[in-house]
Amino acid sequence: MKNHFHVFLPAPVPQAQANRAALKSAVFNDKNGNLRFLRSFRMTRLKSVCSKFITLLFLFSLAACQPASTKFTNTPSTQAASTPQAASVPDVPSLLGVKEETLKGLTIQVWHPWFGVEANLFESQAQAFNQTNPYGIIVQSTSQIDYNELFQSVTAVLPTPNRPQVVIGLPEHALAWNADNYVTDLNNYVNDPKYGFSDSDVKDFPSAFWNQDSIGGHRLGLPAERSARFLLYDVTWARQLGFDVAPTTADEFKTQACAAHAALLNDKDRSNDAMGGWLVDAQSMTALSWLTAFGGGALDGNNYRFLTPNNIAAFTFVKELFDAGCAWSLPDSSGAFDAFANRKALFSTASLEDLSDQSRAFSAANNSDEWTVLAFPGTVQSGLIIYGSSYIILNSTAEQQLASWLFVRWMLSSENQAKWVQVTDLFPLRASSLDLLKDYGDSHPQWGAAIALLPSAEIQPQLASWRTVRIMLGDGFDNMFRTELNNQPVVISNQPAAILQQMDTIAHDLAK
Image (cartoon, rainbow, N blue to C red; front, side, top):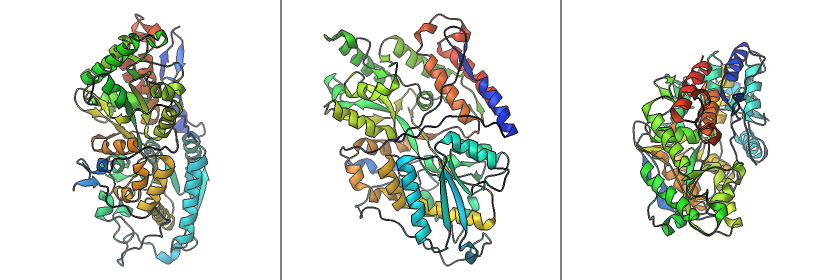
């Protein structure tokens, strides 16, 4: 099943009306000079794949993690994940000022964005919590179908008594809601001696997951799902082209991409002459990953700034790669899995949850090539951006907030996280979950390779306006590959500097 979300701004809220007006200014010109609105952003949720996993990939250190070093380490396998019981709490006083007996029979409402398999899993886990938690707390979950509906629905009810106690939304949603003081700061809950996390619990979360929801000394959420966008790399074909090592720099990437293009250009099949190299993908996380790999990004301090030397270098690199034929695009991105599986591209791009579809495409093509995932290679570092939803607790009564916290803490247990990975193919949010995922890892080598890249991962901009600016980023990146804009005026140019300059203007408007 796939879960789509589209950024929008709901009408009923005055601030949302102002944001909607700003969004409508975020446009690029089409080839006729007409305004073209931003495309919708998509996040997919794709299931299951069969391959083989290398356990040693789990043995790495997250150098940028919490103050003490943290490792995602695969230790001897335990039994498959079972339904966890509610965690016992230390026999010490809580600092939250809530008597435990007041939780009995308390109902909390949880709104989530999922449908299909993910919704079924979440609702079954909520029911398991209802049956096993010793406090008598009852969780009632409601699907809002996707992130668009979730944001609209929550924003509309925030000023009313009908708002839910827990929302599983994007970190930028939490920032928007927190502007009106509707979001609970979770620091007191994380640090509570009775109901909170221990130091080892906190260190169990990779820093790229843990830090996204912490800003300005406040914790506005805890990770619920995390994914990333990767380059896919056909290892077998690369070896046949004479490359025994995956590219780690932009120059190495260009060399291999152009070699693949030359191989298709010089074979007997004329239909593939424009193919090979990198199959272009214009999603916002792909664009941000390239910028990061060249030492750039979306921000200068706490403000958006796209027109920088490093960003120009990044966009110029991929634009020249495309102009040279070493990168190419499809009219319909749905064909990307088949194109990569049929050796029409040495490199493609996919999110973590897409890997199962890519694996199935290799099986359908009867292609036994070895393939893996890479971070985006640059001139300064590798580019890998983590994104995903978070558990957000909205302000309510002290009792409801504690009940909400206890549910969220339970959902983040190692056992529940292992189940979540097996259904969604996403990152496990805790290192300790890997103990329960050996069998899964043995059959998912690309998933394991993705986990091994986490030490270099970075987080998205921590701004409420990022939910609209990221769409603009993807749209502008896509414009670079529109050949009909060659030699056009700056206002409709596909040249990197001109596009980045437009991004600065638009981002400034969206951030107001």
